[in-house]
Amino acid sequence: MVEHLSTKMSAESTKMGSFIHWFRNDLRLYDMPSINAALEKCTTFYPVYIFDENDIKEKQITYNKVRFILDALKDINGKLQPNGGRVYVFKGNPTDIFSDLFKKWNISYLTYEVDVQPAWKVLEKSVQQICQQHSIEIIKDVSHTLWNLEDILKANRGQPPVTYEVFCQVVEALGPPSRPESYVNLEKVLMPKDDSFPIDLPNNPDDLGVFMECIQQSNRIWIGGETHALKHLDARLKVEEEALESGIFMPNQAKPDLLGPSMSLSAALSLGCLSVRKFYWSLQDLHERVNSDICVPDSLIGQLLWREYFYAMCMNNPFYATMVENPICLNIPWTTNEQHLQSWINGKTGYPFIDAAMRQMVQEGWLHHVARNAVACFLTRGDLWISWEEGFKVFMKYLIDADYPVCAGNWMWVSSSAFENILQCPTCISPISYGRCFEPTGDYIRKYVPELKNMPNEYIYEPWLAPLPEQEKAGCIIGKDYPQPIIDHQEAANTNKKRMDIIKESFYTKMVPPHCSPSNPLETRVFMWLPENCIENLMHHRN
Image (cartoon, rainbow, N blue to C red; front, side, top):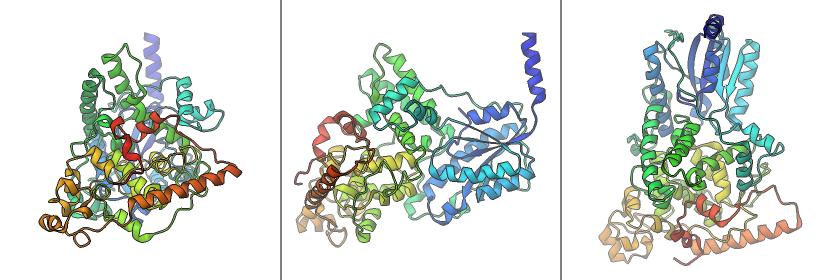
């Protein structure tokens, strides 16, 4: 014991230097291995977050997401203040900012959590060059994914797993992911306050030059920050526990609620307010406590594994979110129709369920997974035959939880561009019956498409079928107060099916890309969040 204490005291006495932690998609103080590693070497800690000026100028980040990030930064700041610390928030070019801070604060180390997104990897290269110029050592570690993705590729002979089924086999061979690390211990850490920078954090997105696009964005639906994320997790676990005791897995999939308070933790996971390892092990431990005699079903952690799979597929693929240069993506000859694209973005397609979903996304920065699938299929192979790349850009811009690898992966999957066996999917989502299956009351449409608030249930999903007296009574004339459908779904679905058949036939005589296909119908149903009684709403039937 004395020897151990002596060693500990010796280690404490050898600590010296200062480090900056570069907060990115890890907006928390729990399960932060890179910070913990730096605290073994340093006594002084400077927390830094940088809003990239180019993202703001090019409007690649919008009001809801910036507000969520500011919530998270204020939450971290509140936890640092009792120990004399603060978060330093900047707007500009990260390489320029770090170059100045390294000299100003006499920095020895820069820490950050690993993120495989191509944009981050490009930026990291320029930051690494600045670090070399200033003799700064970089400490980075893995906590944004369950496993170290390098280990997954190594276990699969240096290549990303070709299918989700293979991926599951690889991670099973690797063993369970590490448990999350404990909270960062700040008791003996120096966190000097540099008064040459503004003391207060930006109060709202307007302070950073990010403004509302519509008045509805003033309604704060999603709250950022680790404190709120952990409370949300506790509430989610109570729901999961009740479901497990009843023999139900993924209750929000079995009974999705498009109008009630969301149980989703996707925004907290995407921006790192909640550690994915914390979420994973909370679910595993809950199942062990409630149903210890039953193996953990894939459905319980299925969405987390899909997230991990898409991250692995994004690894070392700088063209992951594009079509032509992407080695895993089919080059489909999509059409260009700016008018249709803008109608889709603005929620004016004439299909109420599609329009409600698109308006909700812009107004609130979030969509239920079933609504995402519907609007994605409508834009691509279901109706408009417009490239998934256009939809990906819109999702990345407006969704708070827009997670680059997951978002691009979902778009490729739903559009049959990848992760699906050479356009073998014979079905598409009906923009009418699919929504009616999940939300038969029509109240979801009435909330986000108020033009139709007085339309009878009989016509709420197909208002163009309402007789003129019904339209007049509802105060909504179709073609005047609300648009006619911009395309006939049945005709479009049939045309697009023929297009897919032609593309499929073309691959009989040439090399097929290294595609990734659903392993079985159940995998498709789980991915699409389809309960068994709604599977018919994928079919090409007349509405």
